[in-house]
Length: 184
Length: 180
Image (tube, rainbow over all chains, first blue to last red; front, side, top):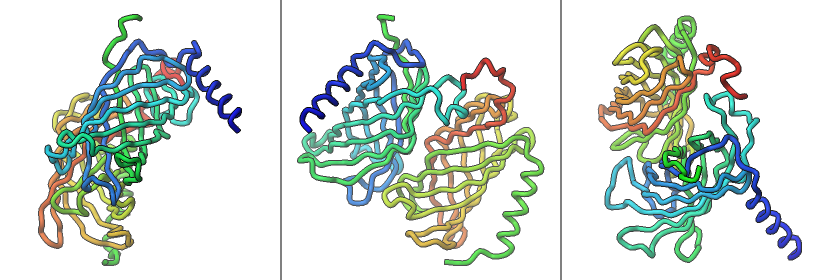
């Protein structure tokens, strides 16, 4: 079992380091990300609609296991409550990109079906240690040359000691690449 | 919970039939929805609908709204909206504003199916980007006033983003311009 895990880990590393680039090609380094979400009953968050607003970098144009990172504000938007705005830092890992996908009919641009996994840590500006960990998935996620579109992305929440703390659901998350990578 | 009256059902079916006969193009919409100060209560809601263009400036849409959080599908509403494009014709005005007059009927309340509160709605979408001609139209930052027809209470609704697709309108594009 241990050998199998070691081999799987080595395969993932090899795939991540592969020179094969993702398609469609993108000259961008990063951009802005926004999403709307809500939290489950029993979570530490009041019922309402929350807006994630932040910046992200997507520096590696890999065909598989493509990482990106983001810094966000999580804003209780409707009803608005400035006193409960939180910050969050996160990592996304795009698993692969599939050009011939069933949703391409709704896209005006060349696109790829690109599901991803995510992990993040949120923190309160008033009491930073009280934040949450989150592990999530983006099962319906499309990538074009200058944007990423994700729909219905669930997250499991964990407290500071990794105890279960409910879940959240992002109705949509759109990321627009606007910062050009200087090397290209 | 009340049962739907025959008149209500007949009115909905007649409206749908008339819209179908007069429709210029069909669209599909998905988006987010929120209620504050009334309606089914705060939370994150998702909406989805079918729209039909009627003339230069009008668009009729039938849609459903379902609670996503904190209790998925705990509340659901069905409704219809007649939207008016303020700045110009829908098909040619890329940046537009929309004014909607709508009706919403609660069909699931606290997890129990049945007819609950009904609402009249006036909604303004200050930024509408895209046209059916290009096959894509987004409503951004829509803010609405909701009137509870039974109790007379007023509350607010909010849509951060509603995306419309018009699949039939892509036909004008040469096949080589779009990768499938």
